[in-house]
Image 1 (cartoon, rainbow, N blue to C red):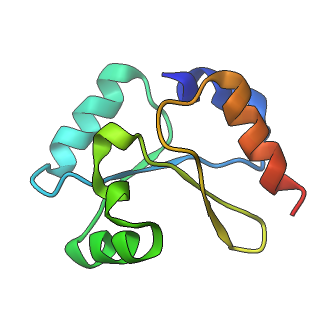
Image 2 (tube, one colour; image 1 turned 120 degrees about the vertical axis):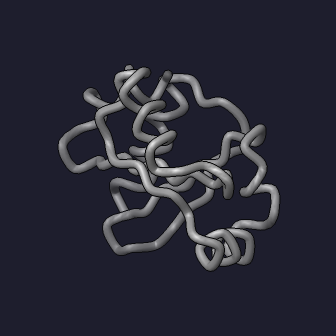
Length: 102
């Protein structure tokens, strides 16, 4: 819920996209989850090729939801893996500011 609370304060240049990495979930389940929690950003369901690409790019730990995986894409299109685990508001703000500058 930290992202939900912190997202408005991060600025208009920050876009949030959640990628569901649970292979057996459906778009209907994801939409219901987002609606029930008031998440107003985009959600995507990772395909098997995308899951493979994520594992290659970030390691298989990225596919473990208990790791609370997150990455940032900067203005140049480069990806940066965030620290594993839940993020507090200050850590999320620092993460964005680190890569906002480029």
